[in-house]
Each structure stands twice: as C-alpha cells, then as structure tokens.
Length: 202
Image 1 (spheres, helix red, strand yellow):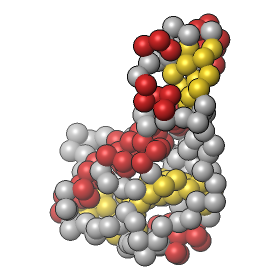
Image 2 (cartoon, rainbow, N blue to C red):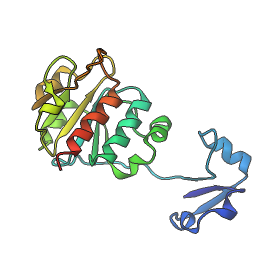
Image 3 (cartoon, rainbow, N blue to C red):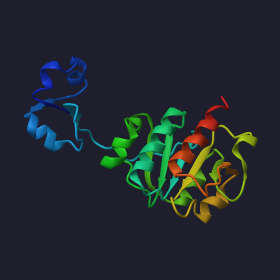
C-alpha cells in the first residue's frame, strides 16, 4: 500500500502508485507525524515483513553475531548488497533487521537481500560455504590471503567479537592490518573492508 502526503501527491511519479495495490493520500502534517524522518519525502509504503525465510546453503552470506548497534547493522547490510553478498544471517542477540533505524541506515539494501533473524549458531551447520571470521589478534592479513568465494563472513559483537562457537566453526581467520596503531576497527568498517576484498576475487 502506498501512502502519499497531500502536497506530494500531485507531483508523484505514476509508477509509485502503480507499484501498490492501494494508494492513500493523507494531510501533509499527518504524513510528517507518521514518518520517522526529519524531512520525509512525501511517499511511503506499507508492506508485510517476510516470514518463514529459509536459509540458502550455498549463497555468499554475512553472519551477524550479536551486533547490537542498529547503525552498524544497517551499514553492514548496505555493504553486503553492494559487494554481492545476497544473504544476511542474524544470530540471536543481533539488533532487529527491520527496526526503523536499521531500515534508515540500510538505505534500501533490505530489498535486495535474503534476511534471516533470531538464528541459532547450530543452524549454521546447514551452510555449504566456508565461514570466514575476523580478529584483531589472530589470522593472516587479509591482503595476503586467497579468500574463498563464495563464503560467509562472520561479524561479531562490537565489544566481544565473534563468539567461541562461531570461531570454532570458521574455516579461515583473517586479520585487518592497522599500521596506524588503533586497537580495533568499528564492525561496520571492518565488514566493508572484508566484503570488498571478497568481491575482488571475481
């Protein structure tokens, strides 16, 4: 269902309304109250969230292990979509993938990805691609590795990193060199570096 503000409706592209089964035009002040954005665009869509999504065993994936900051999660979704990783598996304890802040920071990436939430670590046994984990303390430098493709990159909790159970399942351990001397990278920045490095294998 498409929802338009009164002032945007007359200038809205016809395709917006055609994409929905129903269109509603609301007073502009009401539309601003409905939107979570400071400067809403004048159109929004109401849709049902996907349910019963099955894990795709052989697809290049990103595993989120208790990543809690919604901005980080949304940024990782954007990187996954940009670099050809078509599935994101959020383990229990990860921020809700469809929360408003994750949606905003994802900037539309949700709609090009298979998203699974509340997944238990044991469910990763079904994956047919190797799991790659990052660590600031172990593994080879990312630029020195022939990265497997496709693979599943595991990104861990902002403070604790990847959990021991997931570390034990990993086929490859990777370290991102930091010649500037920082102790660690933000998880979203690390994800962008790793996923980009994997995309260069093609």
